[in-house]
Image (cartoon, rainbow, N blue to C red):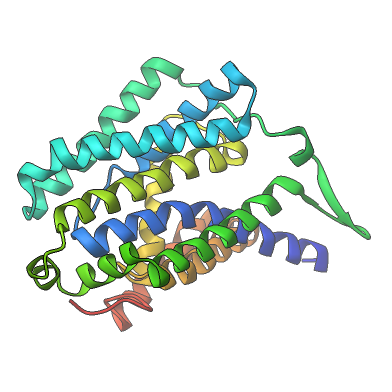
Length: 287
Protein backbone atom coordinates (compact mmCIF):
# COMPACT_ATOMS: atom_id res chain seq x y z
CA UNK A 1 0.00 0.00 0.00
CA UNK A 2 1.42 3.37 -1.04
CA UNK A 3 1.60 6.32 1.35
CA UNK A 4 -1.19 8.11 -0.57
CA UNK A 5 -3.41 5.04 -0.38
CA UNK A 6 -2.68 4.73 3.35
CA UNK A 7 -3.76 8.32 4.06
CA UNK A 8 -6.81 7.87 1.82
CA UNK A 9 -7.90 4.86 3.86
CA UNK A 10 -7.44 6.81 7.09
CA UNK A 11 -9.61 9.65 5.78
CA UNK A 12 -12.17 7.16 4.40
CA UNK A 13 -12.42 5.60 7.85
CA UNK A 14 -12.72 8.94 9.60
CA UNK A 15 -15.40 10.24 7.18
CA UNK A 16 -17.47 7.06 7.54
CA UNK A 17 -16.96 7.23 11.29
CA UNK A 18 -18.13 10.85 11.22
CA UNK A 19 -21.51 9.78 9.80
CA UNK A 20 -21.72 7.05 12.43
CA UNK A 21 -20.96 9.60 15.14
CA UNK A 22 -24.17 11.56 14.46
CA UNK A 23 -26.15 8.34 14.69
CA UNK A 24 -24.28 6.75 17.59
CA UNK A 25 -24.26 9.88 19.77
CA UNK A 26 -28.06 10.09 19.57
CA UNK A 27 -28.41 6.36 20.20
CA UNK A 28 -26.12 6.41 23.21
CA UNK A 29 -27.81 9.54 24.61
CA UNK A 30 -31.21 7.85 24.52
CA UNK A 31 -29.88 4.63 26.04
CA UNK A 32 -27.78 6.37 28.67
CA UNK A 33 -30.67 8.41 30.02
CA UNK A 34 -33.73 6.30 29.31
CA UNK A 35 -32.25 2.78 29.09
CA UNK A 36 -34.14 2.31 25.81
CA UNK A 37 -32.36 0.34 23.08
CA UNK A 38 -33.89 2.32 20.25
CA UNK A 39 -33.48 0.03 17.24
CA UNK A 40 -35.69 2.42 15.21
CA UNK A 41 -32.66 4.72 14.96
CA UNK A 42 -31.68 3.17 11.60
CA UNK A 43 -35.19 3.81 10.29
CA UNK A 44 -34.95 7.43 11.48
CA UNK A 45 -31.69 7.75 9.51
CA UNK A 46 -33.21 6.30 6.32
CA UNK A 47 -36.43 8.35 6.41
CA UNK A 48 -34.42 11.47 7.30
CA UNK A 49 -32.32 10.95 4.19
CA UNK A 50 -35.36 10.51 1.96
CA UNK A 51 -37.04 13.62 3.42
CA UNK A 52 -33.80 15.41 2.56
CA UNK A 53 -33.94 14.22 -1.05
CA UNK A 54 -37.53 15.43 -1.39
CA UNK A 55 -36.60 18.81 0.09
CA UNK A 56 -33.59 19.23 -2.22
CA UNK A 57 -35.71 18.36 -5.27
CA UNK A 58 -38.41 20.85 -4.21
CA UNK A 59 -36.19 23.75 -3.13
CA UNK A 60 -32.71 23.05 -4.55
CA UNK A 61 -31.23 23.77 -1.09
CA UNK A 62 -29.02 21.16 0.58
CA UNK A 63 -28.89 23.20 3.81
CA UNK A 64 -32.66 23.50 4.00
CA UNK A 65 -32.84 19.74 3.44
CA UNK A 66 -30.67 19.16 6.52
CA UNK A 67 -32.86 21.42 8.65
CA UNK A 68 -36.18 20.02 7.39
CA UNK A 69 -35.05 16.40 7.76
CA UNK A 70 -33.67 16.88 11.26
CA UNK A 71 -36.84 18.66 12.42
CA UNK A 72 -39.14 16.11 10.74
CA UNK A 73 -37.37 13.19 12.40
CA UNK A 74 -37.35 15.07 15.70
CA UNK A 75 -41.16 15.24 15.50
CA UNK A 76 -41.22 11.54 14.60
CA UNK A 77 -39.12 10.96 17.72
CA UNK A 78 -41.64 12.93 19.78
CA UNK A 79 -44.48 10.74 18.48
CA UNK A 80 -42.46 7.57 19.09
CA UNK A 81 -41.56 8.47 22.67
CA UNK A 82 -44.85 10.00 23.80
CA UNK A 83 -47.35 7.74 22.01
CA UNK A 84 -45.62 4.42 21.36
CA UNK A 85 -42.96 3.95 24.04
CA UNK A 86 -44.35 5.75 27.10
CA UNK A 87 -47.11 3.18 27.79
CA UNK A 88 -44.50 0.39 27.94
CA UNK A 89 -41.68 2.26 29.74
CA UNK A 90 -39.48 -0.03 31.79
CA UNK A 91 -40.46 -3.15 29.85
CA UNK A 92 -37.20 -3.91 28.02
CA UNK A 93 -38.36 -6.64 25.65
CA UNK A 94 -41.54 -4.86 24.45
CA UNK A 95 -39.49 -1.68 23.93
CA UNK A 96 -36.94 -3.50 21.77
CA UNK A 97 -39.63 -5.32 19.78
CA UNK A 98 -41.60 -2.12 19.25
CA UNK A 99 -38.59 -0.14 18.00
CA UNK A 100 -37.44 -2.89 15.64
CA UNK A 101 -41.02 -3.23 14.36
CA UNK A 102 -41.06 0.52 13.78
CA UNK A 103 -37.90 0.15 11.69
CA UNK A 104 -39.67 -2.38 9.44
CA UNK A 105 -42.67 -0.05 9.10
CA UNK A 106 -40.49 2.95 8.24
CA UNK A 107 -38.51 0.86 5.74
CA UNK A 108 -41.68 -0.32 3.98
CA UNK A 109 -43.13 3.19 3.89
CA UNK A 110 -39.87 4.53 2.43
CA UNK A 111 -39.91 1.80 -0.23
CA UNK A 112 -43.53 2.58 -1.14
CA UNK A 113 -43.00 6.36 -1.31
CA UNK A 114 -39.48 6.75 -2.71
CA UNK A 115 -38.93 3.42 -4.52
CA UNK A 116 -36.10 0.89 -4.30
CA UNK A 117 -33.39 2.44 -6.48
CA UNK A 118 -30.17 3.68 -4.85
CA UNK A 119 -30.53 7.45 -4.57
CA UNK A 120 -27.75 9.92 -3.72
CA UNK A 121 -28.58 13.30 -2.22
CA UNK A 122 -27.32 16.15 -4.43
CA UNK A 123 -24.54 18.16 -2.80
CA UNK A 124 -23.71 21.87 -3.13
CA UNK A 125 -21.48 22.40 -6.17
CA UNK A 126 -18.56 23.72 -4.10
CA UNK A 127 -18.44 20.41 -2.19
CA UNK A 128 -18.02 18.39 -5.40
CA UNK A 129 -14.61 17.46 -6.68
CA UNK A 130 -11.41 16.91 -4.74
CA UNK A 131 -9.08 19.01 -2.62
CA UNK A 132 -5.49 18.69 -3.82
CA UNK A 133 -2.36 18.96 -1.70
CA UNK A 134 0.55 18.31 -4.05
CA UNK A 135 -0.07 14.95 -5.72
CA UNK A 136 -2.58 13.91 -3.07
CA UNK A 137 -6.28 14.48 -3.80
CA UNK A 138 -9.27 13.71 -1.60
CA UNK A 139 -13.04 14.35 -2.02
CA UNK A 140 -14.05 17.68 -0.51
CA UNK A 141 -17.37 16.38 0.73
CA UNK A 142 -15.80 13.70 2.91
CA UNK A 143 -13.54 16.33 4.48
CA UNK A 144 -16.65 18.46 5.06
CA UNK A 145 -18.34 15.54 6.86
CA UNK A 146 -15.30 15.10 9.14
CA UNK A 147 -15.35 18.83 9.95
CA UNK A 148 -19.10 18.68 10.71
CA UNK A 149 -18.58 15.76 13.10
CA UNK A 150 -15.82 17.63 14.95
CA UNK A 151 -18.04 20.71 15.31
CA UNK A 152 -20.98 18.57 16.44
CA UNK A 153 -18.76 16.80 18.98
CA UNK A 154 -17.64 20.15 20.44
CA UNK A 155 -21.28 21.34 20.54
CA UNK A 156 -22.44 18.17 22.30
CA UNK A 157 -19.66 18.44 24.88
CA UNK A 158 -20.59 22.07 25.51
CA UNK A 159 -24.26 21.14 25.95
CA UNK A 160 -23.35 18.25 28.25
CA UNK A 161 -20.88 20.15 30.43
CA UNK A 162 -22.01 23.78 30.36
CA UNK A 163 -25.81 23.91 30.11
CA UNK A 164 -28.52 23.29 32.68
CA UNK A 165 -30.16 20.73 30.41
CA UNK A 166 -26.85 18.90 30.09
CA UNK A 167 -26.48 18.86 33.86
CA UNK A 168 -29.97 17.38 34.23
CA UNK A 169 -29.17 14.73 31.62
CA UNK A 170 -25.93 13.78 33.37
CA UNK A 171 -27.68 13.63 36.71
CA UNK A 172 -30.51 11.61 35.16
CA UNK A 173 -28.04 9.07 33.78
CA UNK A 174 -26.52 8.57 37.24
CA UNK A 175 -29.68 8.64 39.39
CA UNK A 176 -33.06 9.28 37.79
CA UNK A 177 -35.01 8.85 41.02
CA UNK A 178 -32.91 11.47 42.83
CA UNK A 179 -33.33 13.96 39.97
CA UNK A 180 -37.09 13.47 40.04
CA UNK A 181 -37.11 13.89 43.83
CA UNK A 182 -35.38 17.29 43.40
CA UNK A 183 -38.37 18.55 41.42
CA UNK A 184 -36.99 18.14 37.90
CA UNK A 185 -39.61 17.05 35.38
CA UNK A 186 -37.67 13.95 34.38
CA UNK A 187 -40.32 12.92 31.84
CA UNK A 188 -39.79 16.19 29.96
CA UNK A 189 -36.01 15.56 30.08
CA UNK A 190 -36.59 12.06 28.70
CA UNK A 191 -38.74 13.41 25.88
CA UNK A 192 -36.19 16.13 25.07
CA UNK A 193 -33.35 13.60 24.99
CA UNK A 194 -35.28 11.26 22.71
CA UNK A 195 -36.21 14.13 20.36
CA UNK A 196 -32.60 15.34 20.25
CA UNK A 197 -31.36 11.83 19.47
CA UNK A 198 -33.91 11.59 16.65
CA UNK A 199 -32.81 15.06 15.43
CA UNK A 200 -29.24 13.76 15.11
CA UNK A 201 -30.44 10.69 13.20
CA UNK A 202 -32.31 12.89 10.68
CA UNK A 203 -29.23 15.10 10.37
CA UNK A 204 -27.10 12.00 9.72
CA UNK A 205 -29.56 10.78 7.06
CA UNK A 206 -28.87 13.80 4.85
CA UNK A 207 -25.14 14.11 5.59
CA UNK A 208 -24.58 10.38 5.10
CA UNK A 209 -26.97 10.00 2.17
CA UNK A 210 -24.93 12.47 0.14
CA UNK A 211 -22.00 10.04 -0.18
CA UNK A 212 -23.28 6.62 0.94
CA UNK A 213 -26.51 6.95 -1.14
CA UNK A 214 -29.86 5.78 0.20
CA UNK A 215 -31.53 2.47 -0.57
CA UNK A 216 -33.92 0.04 1.17
CA UNK A 217 -32.13 -2.06 3.77
CA UNK A 218 -29.56 0.58 4.57
CA UNK A 219 -31.44 1.35 7.79
CA UNK A 220 -30.40 -2.02 9.25
CA UNK A 221 -26.88 -1.86 7.82
CA UNK A 222 -26.12 1.57 9.30
CA UNK A 223 -27.77 0.58 12.59
CA UNK A 224 -25.44 -2.43 12.80
CA UNK A 225 -22.38 -0.19 12.52
CA UNK A 226 -23.83 2.30 15.04
CA UNK A 227 -24.43 -0.55 17.50
CA UNK A 228 -20.81 -1.67 17.07
CA UNK A 229 -19.71 1.89 17.86
CA UNK A 230 -21.70 2.24 21.08
CA UNK A 231 -20.87 -1.29 22.25
CA UNK A 232 -17.13 -0.78 21.71
CA UNK A 233 -17.12 2.74 23.16
CA UNK A 234 -19.51 2.01 26.01
CA UNK A 235 -23.27 2.53 26.14
CA UNK A 236 -24.27 5.95 27.42
CA UNK A 237 -20.82 7.53 26.96
CA UNK A 238 -20.34 10.43 24.53
CA UNK A 239 -16.56 10.08 24.77
CA UNK A 240 -17.00 6.37 24.14
CA UNK A 241 -19.03 7.12 21.01
CA UNK A 242 -16.22 9.36 19.74
CA UNK A 243 -13.60 6.69 20.39
CA UNK A 244 -15.88 4.01 18.92
CA UNK A 245 -16.46 5.80 15.61
CA UNK A 246 -12.70 6.22 15.10
CA UNK A 247 -12.06 2.52 15.81
CA UNK A 248 -14.99 1.23 13.75
CA UNK A 249 -14.37 3.64 10.87
CA UNK A 250 -10.68 2.76 10.56
CA UNK A 251 -11.24 -0.99 10.94
CA UNK A 252 -13.99 -0.90 8.32
CA UNK A 253 -11.90 1.14 5.90
CA UNK A 254 -8.70 -0.91 6.13
CA UNK A 255 -10.61 -4.19 6.39
CA UNK A 256 -12.48 -3.57 3.13
CA UNK A 257 -9.28 -2.40 1.41
CA UNK A 258 -6.99 -5.22 2.54
CA UNK A 259 -9.26 -8.26 3.11
CA UNK A 260 -12.68 -7.37 1.64
CA UNK A 261 -13.90 -10.97 1.94
CA UNK A 262 -13.37 -10.73 5.73
CA UNK A 263 -14.58 -7.16 6.25
CA UNK A 264 -17.30 -8.11 8.76
CA UNK A 265 -14.91 -10.45 10.59
CA UNK A 266 -12.29 -7.72 10.95
CA UNK A 267 -14.95 -5.39 12.36
CA UNK A 268 -16.85 -7.64 14.74
CA UNK A 269 -14.02 -9.91 15.94
CA UNK A 270 -12.28 -6.99 17.74
CA UNK A 271 -15.67 -5.99 19.15
CA UNK A 272 -16.12 -9.48 20.61
CA UNK A 273 -12.61 -9.40 22.10
CA UNK A 274 -13.21 -5.98 23.68
CA UNK A 275 -16.48 -7.21 25.20
CA UNK A 276 -14.71 -10.24 26.67
CA UNK A 277 -12.18 -7.95 28.40
CA UNK A 278 -14.50 -5.00 29.19
CA UNK A 279 -18.21 -5.95 28.98
CA UNK A 280 -19.17 -2.30 29.59
CA UNK A 281 -17.15 -1.11 26.57
CA UNK A 282 -13.91 0.88 26.55
CA UNK A 283 -15.30 3.99 28.30
CA UNK A 284 -18.64 2.72 29.61
CA UNK A 285 -19.66 2.19 33.22
CA UNK A 286 -20.92 -0.98 34.77
CA UNK A 287 -24.58 -0.55 35.76
